[in-house]
Amino acid sequence: MAADARYILSIDQGTTSTRALLFDASGSPMRVRQKELRQIFPRDGWVEHDAAEIWAATLEVCRGVLTGGTTATNIAAIGITNQRETTVLWERATGKPLHNAIVWQDRRTAALCAKHKAEGKEPVVQAKTGLLLDPYFSGTKLAWLLDNVPDARKRAAAGELCFGTIDSWLIFNLTGGKRHVTDATNASRTLLFNIDKQEWDEEILGWFDIPKAVLPEVLDCCADFGATAKELFGAEIPVAGVAGDQQAATVGQACFEPGLMKSTYGTGCFAVVNTGARRVESRNRLLGTVAYRLNGETTYALEGSIFMAGAIVQWLRDEMKLVDSSAESEEMAREANPNSQAVLVPAFTGLGAPYWEPDVRAALFGMTRDTGAKEVVRAALESVSFQTRDLMDAMGDDMKAAGLTSPQALRVDGGMVANNWFMQNLTDIIGRPVERPEVTETTALGAAYLAGMHVGFYGDMADVAAHWRCERAFSPEMAESERAERYGRWQGYVKRVIG
Image (cartoon, rainbow, N blue to C red; front, side, top):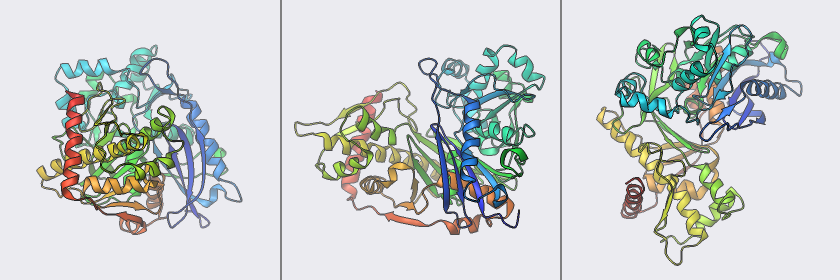
């Protein structure tokens, strides 16, 4: 590490934008640049990104934070966090993508997943990978590319092609094509990685006819991923930390002990609870995954996803025209009739964990003659709290069955957590404290911590945990009888939507 290294450069490559952030030694964000990402929809249910555009945007925003006298020599290391499961296939010799990246939201492989489910393979997949047979994950996307790009499977077997999630794609380009690698968290989201053995699974690769030669090497989250080509930034910078976005947020929230849980409220909601060195097999259709792998030691997690969180507020604003801004939703919810029994089940694109019902649709129940816009807004925000309760109860049940302590509190981040009414409603519905950190850029911060720990810019996990600060803690104020009544009403309406 150079003597004048003052920052970690964190690349946060997301679904809708690419960002670069500089973090100082205290873990505070000092500078940020962002570029929106074009969404491509070739057919109904298909979602793609231009991989070359992602790389160009990444280079642009990274160079954008190296201004005002800051140079590459001031950067101790680069950390990368990324939209998970999005799949790229490119030529090893030229770095040219053979097709648009297939995004995690893409559903084109639903029939392939259904075929393998019908053949009874899902229990084996879940036992080995922690995942379910769903188009969400990378493995079937890669199989589709190998089937549909001319000569792709033959070339892949010959070692001419590279598969990677976005982290691999960026590292390949940052290092001038020298490194084809990924980290254990991103590997754990491919449907191809045995998370117990920490290796690519030969049996599953055979089911999808995927040659092993196309796969990247899997490294720890803190590791030597290579150095940037000198011509990119004027000097080489080590790439030293990588994690998928939700795992990076788990690190950024310092959830390093079993039972510590974070929930990110962005477009959707992703809740992750640390289960320690022990992998917990879910009885509630939650996902088992790698939380992080450091010094060759794997820490596991349970994960549940909610499809609609911040997207519900966008729906209130853009489609229903009930609010003019996200901030207005807080005021309207606060002014709504507190005795309203209106309940929104926001299954606009189905229901995620623990239901996994992709074909059900949204419904608004319990309206009366005096139900107005404010009550609908309140019901919309409450639905996110109810879904979080669903996840926490499922996680608690799984962890209790495994002899572990269930989550006692919830650390939160994402755009919705600025809404104080939602924060109080969330703590009231889950019946546990909710903690909002001082630094809410937890995804990018987690990647920075991983890179910084590897090069000595930050200390160990205990030092990182000591950096975490709670900006505001929310505690339950709702009576247990009212909590039970409201949650019971929600559960009843969910059953009606599903059944």
